[in-house]
Image 1 (cartoon, rainbow, N blue to C red):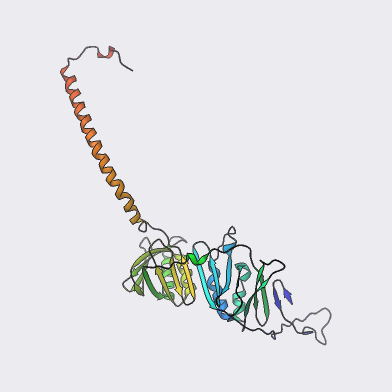
Image 2 (image 1 turned 180 degrees about the vertical axis):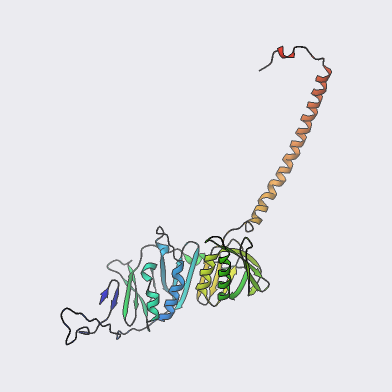
Length: 331
């Protein structure tokens, strides 16, 4: 039985009984489809729920509206990105190598369906006569899902993952989510930036306008401060779950959230403090040049003042003429 891109399996005459009238169709789905699993169904469901929220919502970026399924070196990697965040999950996998882009709208509903499946097999199939056309196939005991891959090339995501850091912090995601929720209530708008101050065995979360503050115990290595969009922070904490590790380079470079088999890159919000060293460097050089210019101007001003004083003295010594207004004026 085929419904759209999905296929289920029925035994012969399973939907026909002795007293089945011609006007009635009794459909029974047979659970006897044999599936040799190469991946855990619940494991795949959780992986999809971790990457799908970080796909782009704008229609002018169709590639970023997709989830990348990539199999290489015994790993199934699921990747998504929206231009500001990049999410990646790696799962142990036994199957042929390949990759395909699947639009997130086609994957909706599959995460909950996979939670009810006992076995699942993931594979790639060529679509039609085109050698470039690849389809993703998910086989379960009841249903066979098949999606044609989207056209386009996904960005080289591995180059976007930072590798060098100066600050490391590990904390409980659930405690952090509660702190973010409490700070969100104090915000006057839907956009609620949150400042993270890391150091001395804790993470301090605060509103930029100092309306609220929350402290979370953490294991810290180094110190750092960064501003992050509150909704981005909440999404990252929910995706990681449990204990999450945050790695920072500085206040203006991408930050990395990690948990077992999961990585999420998030761009911070720029602040005046993050640009302070650069501004100081830029103003230091003009200041020296301005000092030399001012010194030259002072010397010229002193000369002009001396000439003006001399002319004033000379004019004061000359006798005044009557009917000065009738003198010719040079133009």
